[in-house]
Length: 250
Length: 227
Length: 161
Image 1 (cartoon, rainbow over the protein chains, first blue to last red):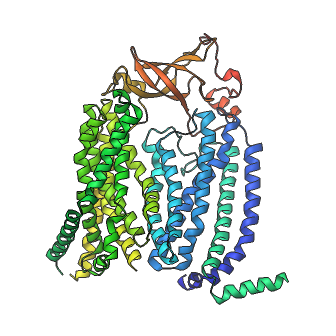
Image 2: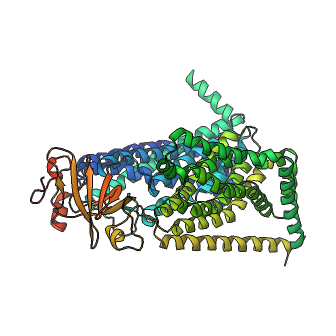
């Protein structure tokens, strides 16, 4: 496996590999999201208690899950960057952090919009919401640290360490609803047992989650390609790429 | 190198920190003065009523403690970095994690402990009901080592940046939120006549955990910064 | 032992011990139950009863048929229970959509004489179960009321003013 992976530690190879994935990811993300959200918002039955308001779950849950998932991904990239000093892993931190921050922000925003009519409050300083807010700050901190150094490698390594320190927050977010008497309800679908919804609700929810995954992957792929280009600007292969693009334009 | 010489290294490092602090007393006294000043601003700003002050006192004291810990944080490794002793620490035969723990300890003794000692006076100024005093001191006693350890991580990460101050606060403050929540909840619940033992145990757990893991992060960060 | 290996062993050992102690503390703390709110039984029969005049949060189920509304103002009163005792909550303001009899709520306010809580805020708590109205009716015998309609709050017999 190492022999297979090794070339992708270099910018050029991964740039082209990601470029080949990107159109597929984008197209499938658009398709799956369209199906999932359309199904969830229009065709899934209303809830017996919350009526139509619960439908925000089709955006809230995928974004919240993905916000934690991307953080875990970023932390793994950080570990790889620190231990094996692979540059692609360092750059992927910069590629992942903004996407994760936006996902976290979406989950907070939709949560507030859902909480107001249902619980009666936009925001409550309880464990689940506070730890999710800290996740947002962590993403922003990692991003700020990454870009703070004039030397990119130092910045990437410093950001990696911070990302790893912040991993402590992930189990806190996940278990907060069980550890404290939180206002937030427990998880609907992360348990391995049967989801606590009927299939006509959880199937569109799964489709939405899958769509969000594809979308996140597409965004990260695109951002990583940009980061590779930005970092390797002085390498001959990038210059050739740019010249090639210019020739095509003319 | 055997155990004994590691110990003498740690002792030498801490002694040096104390000596530097003694020579520049203002560095350790200024944050304490800052705490006192801000605490006196509150009764002036919100009015001297017992009820209001007593309600906000735990929160105010803790927030001021957080801000005060940020004041000197940039200096934690800056001088060592500039005069090259940080590099010597990296090269020394003793594990860097152990030296990091020594730095954290001397930072706590010089900044955290005085704050704990000062806290009853702040509680008096803010008219915190007497039931909360012991819990307040205990939360500070358990919480300030966490502040020192986290500050050390942040300071080590940003030490090679010339202008790390604002960034350092941005990195550290969110990480302090859980600490703030548990500490103020502990004081609040003892003000309500409930036991604060649950929150205090949480703080104790956090403290041991940060003191165990922070030296690793600090050592890694120093290695990155010194390169 | 080789010094290098000895160093590593000492480090791993101290890590294990530190994390172990921390976990013990945290597990102990978890068993102490740090709550967002009191339940009515904790309030009336628990070890640490709140005192009159104390700010607190009480959480429980709204007792069926206990909601009384004032015809002219937004004042409302209802009983909250968990397993045994009940606590009366007085509130003035707009209740959340999910507020219904039999629904879990959290009220924040000040304790007054005779187990009455004068609430400044009432929040509704719901569980993680979602189901379509027909299914809920079949399974639980709960009839769906559109939360946007007025019926959601008033359930006559003992209700009204």
